[in-house]
Length: 274
Image (cartoon, rainbow, N blue to C red):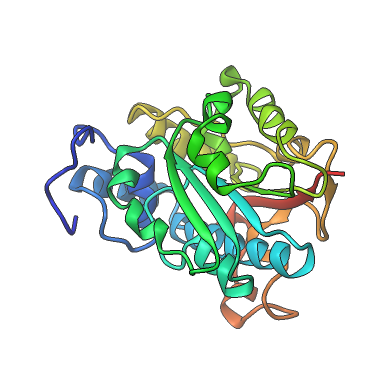
């Protein structure tokens, strides 16, 4: 890690999903134990680096589409993770400088780097809340949220690679329903979710690695991911593999065209609240 001294409250005795994700993206904000766990995942699923990269690329494209085509000017990004530039607010504010973004995560390490998430344009606003998606009421009632977001106007709820860390026992539909209920008509849900659909045996091994490291996960099928969008109007192309959601060029770039669905193994979609 670039700074080997852990911040107060950070558990370095076991790997953490956010720090493993940082490793997948080629970052430096992780510890040896995270690198070891990430490499264990990569040994059974070499596509994990592609999956992480395409997840990030989907977030960029979905943010731009919502800003350019749907007039969204506010975002609530939960499960932010360790900041990796360009961050969501940088993408949004490159389209609409007045964009406002609230980031939320329950990892103390993210708080350590939260300054990166605060570098807003003069016209816009950003803030960071230390909060847990499993307690949506606490998140929605945080004073920092109401200082930045106007919940009477459309908000994009951004859940990138988050909901597979919310198992059925935690009632993800209740959590998502509470968050969407707080947002007005015209708001959006942008969501990405890892899936075992293309290689169940490999993804069972990935599940076992995360669970044994103390991070329960539940990777879901396309139908299960689609159910998160019940009651919303899906934007074209609907629920699709990450690299196929609105590629930047009509056919995507050469590298993206060469990707297989099994490598990416990520369902993505964007829906609008009627």
